[in-house]
Image (cartoon, rainbow, N blue to C red; front, side, top):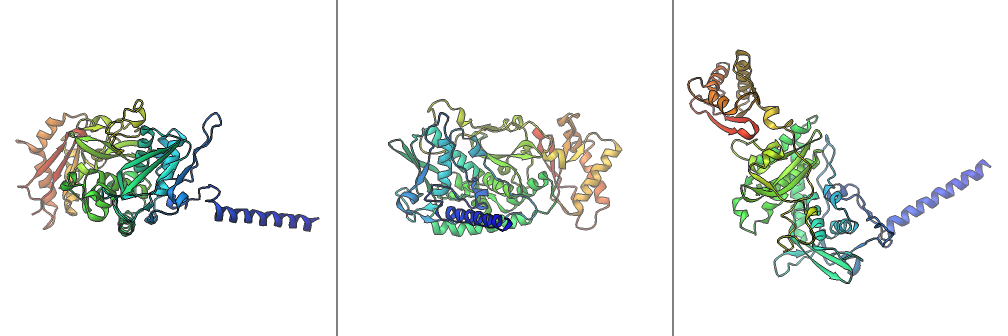
Length: 463
């Protein structure tokens, strides 16, 4: 009897193996998705299949030109940079999760396939068409399509070659959407290797054991160190790379979109949930980030933070602070009917739902700044010791945080104005213990105010 049961079990296992092998070999013909589990981490997909609509209606299915007519586009590499040895890879699917209907979600998944099949030849506009993603038995609205494209781009900063435009057509009840690339496949593949190498270098330089805030600081400083603002790209459409992550990470030049997408991409490799925000800054089109640190959400503007010295005024701030000179574009899902502005196949000008940012707990000045809560002897010694420690490593600047119990303007006046000039007192005390080459020049004291965050940055010049 025991031998009989063993034989039955062996036959069952052999049959199961055969079924698995069959599914692996013929999953395409069966209409099953079979995603590479690691590649899907940064593609924003986890083998999602669209659910049935309520009422038992037919499930949407997505079909690309590749599946119907053979591969019209050449293959773009799906290679990604290796994950960090010390931190988990964050799987960004917030855009996909925001799409509330199965047809839009199916379109998103279809674009994840077709974006890697780009034509080798440019169209009349100079762009390289991707294979179309077709949602069967569903006529998607302009709002649905734009929301799906926005979600797709928001989740996938690594897809730097994707143009911020699309086209769509209807064939009966089917909807076909086409994305476009800036480059032919061969050039894309060469840049993918370069960007992955840059990501690997930056992420590999982040030490083990850092808090979420310290990881964020390290990534921001790394981007600022290697990147400069590309003012020419604001109006020169040929400088498209500055609007993508590879502009910041490969070329070392970017506009706000490039900074924000690079920050999002690097954050994912360090286990941080970081997203992009569309809007305006001082009246001009702008993009920045929101980031979750220890469970709380903050605004981070890496573009406005890049300078000499680094500016931390917009490093982890609230909605109310960012709105003093930034405006946040509206939620596309709340747009009524088909009232989508600029109907030119561009998915910007809107956001997906954003969570409230109402904490200053992880604000840079509050956590890293030298605290100023008064000018008694104990506080003065702490400030002088902190400046001495900065001078020892020849730090280019130090930051102060002025406690909320003090009047900000009056405190700044006391620190940098006559007759008391408290900051000079701190520097002189620090210089007494400094060695040659590390003494701060007392005649060249410069400072930058960050009143919104109750901070102040002091630039240190050395003798």
